[in-house]
Amino acid sequence: MTPLEIETKAIITALNISRGGVPKLPVEAAQVTPLGLEGDRQRDKRYHGGPERALCLFSQELMEYLQGEGHPITPGSTGENITIRGLKWENIIPGCRLRLGDEVEVEVTSYTTPCKNISASFVDGYFNRIHQSKYPGQSRLYSRVLRTGILRTGDIVEVVETQSSGGTGRDRT
Image (cartoon, rainbow, N blue to C red; front, side, top):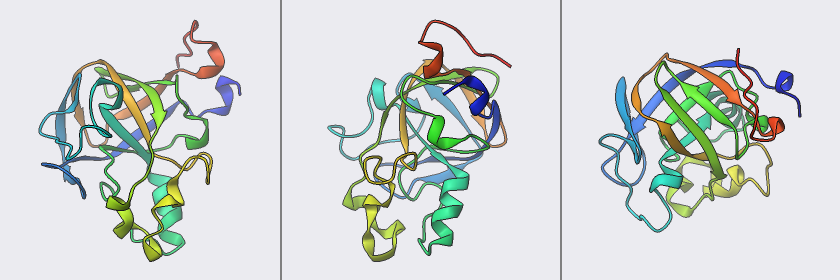
């Protein structure tokens, strides 16, 4: 993969938080801390949250594709905090760094593992429809926060480092 295979700009279409569990509900703006969006809570900290899983990211285009398959998925319904439009999602992999808005920078740490708690977002409860090993490039992603700040719906997202750069170079636009 080369940096040119990845769209370099995108936008945040939704920010979502909850007091624990799903669905996460929309907010227009949120402070990003080292542990995620301020006001967001996770029900089971063994599998969610913490510094390596501070934010859960998902693709707006992929969500719309899944809706086209008949799934009742909506922003926040699968537990993601940030929904993004404009990235080639299959190329956003662990090790990629993204700048969110003017201040926040994150590094993708892993693919998420879907569970039964998000089954209401899928036809026949088939939550594995977004499992990375079954549908590569169609998973939600966890990330760590490298730089904190405020995010707003509509903020620009930039890929600032790709895995293809070997983790040593920076691909900036």
